[in-house]
Length: 315
Image (cartoon, rainbow, N blue to C red; front, side):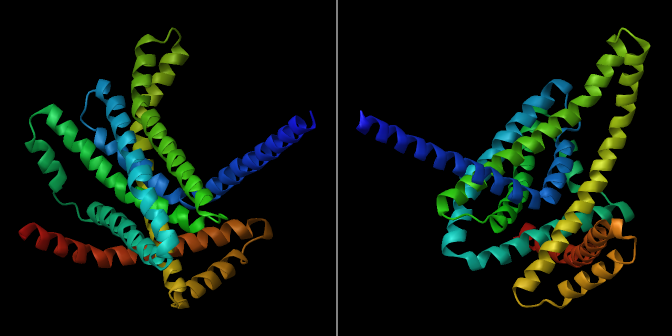
């Protein structure tokens, strides 16, 4: 009997350790996931463009296929690479982060440049040349998964840099939770966004009361505004996150001048307002300066990236 009680006591102890580990993973995942907020916003803002032009009945199946591709990107491809880097080449994490940050800066700056100086889109011309809807859908899904791979790599690298785990298994579990959680959040939000106009149209035509029909019309009219807001917020998030990654990377590599000055300027601006707004004003000031740097760096990269792209195309 005493042996059984001892065994039960050991099992209870193991259960407590396991429960504590689950709590630790959840807490670490939440902390790491918060660091990736800017990239997540951009991911959610970018994806709906791949659904434009398709019948409403095809939207959710396309989102599901992109979601599966995103999970494959994060869990099967990127998670093992991230763990290898973290345990055998941690020195490579900062340069990779800076490379991903540069990509975000380039994408954000290119979007702003396109608005200020409209020019023909090569992607749109390619889409118009494809006559088979099934083939166009395949091409769009492949393009979305390829874009997701780049953003997922940035999300996983940012999360990896933020994880403080006692061992490799906890680190891997936390990173997996972040990857799955981010994917569900992003593509769940995308599904809600792209179907909202269908919900509005249904209410407009079928709601039994004038209030319901008015709500439906309001949803239909609001969706283009929401898409515009998402595009603006996504672009700003790209520049903010990309700029802050580059600046922090420079500090890690020993070039801390810019980061220190931005911190001092943000501190001064934050303390120039009433005390109740100090923290918020300081954060907004720093985020704005990071974003301005990200825009400047992205504008520098535009001719470089386009030149390299042309060389590869010729090759």
